[in-house]
Length: 108
Length: 247
Image (cartoon, rainbow over all chains, first blue to last red; front, side, top):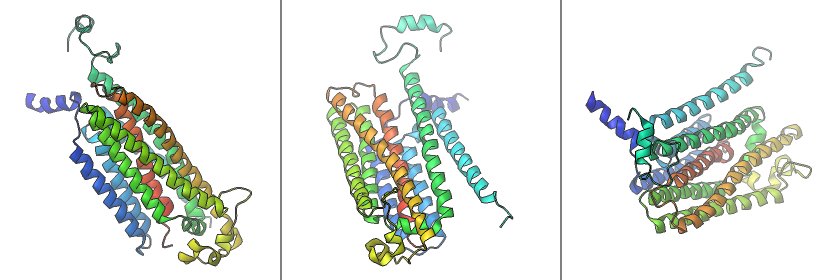
């Protein structure tokens, strides 16, 4: 039990300094992702054009949140806050869109 | 943790750093609390931009052809360049946080200055794009012009994208696209302007030696704000510039 508690305690109270190498790796990935999303926009992918673009954007945003914004190394409180925010955001958007899609269902 | 925190507090009183406020137990607790508050603020920002994104999705669905023609008016080159600039500025901001944490005053000032300059470059490119829209009368309002959409051959960007002439009622909806374009990029730019102003303040404070004495909360939380503005652009760029290239 005590072995289990030790890292958790550190996680909550030690200020983790993210190294410049991590930042450098992330910024390179982000720039490559930007290149990929621009390149993909020139391909004819039909319905997958927006899906690919948004998928790349979500990956890039996740990397920014986890590493640039230190959430990977943050307290559980911060992780929960971010998670709750994303959940609420997705819920509100999808319920709004569901309303617009289904409002006139069967009336056309 | 002690059974009698009041006594512990008395005993510790002369040892704690000056920046530890009295209503906090420890520096860690203070840092966690401000971090939590900053994230709560950012969540309100997510909801605010979320409304704009949702409006964009719904209108794009309704006025699809008009949104496709409207997005063909944007320059992918400028958009890509600006994305690169903003991502780089996020990197220099992250380096600033690292410099503050490792108490490097020169490095912190340099990182903040580069972030500041990159922020201005972003706004500069944005203003070039805006002035193109103004010249073509693509700013929603009394002087809005439908020419690029009714007669695409007269417009370089529309011709390059191979646009077909739109019927008048469809073409009129391009104004909705540009309303959302200006609302979204304008609100984003406003956030950039506020960020750049705070950066200017931080550069002066950092030169005087602030933030590099172990109290990095302000730099860290400003970094969160700056990265958040970056994330908004990461979504704006594909939605406004890229996804309608082939439709």
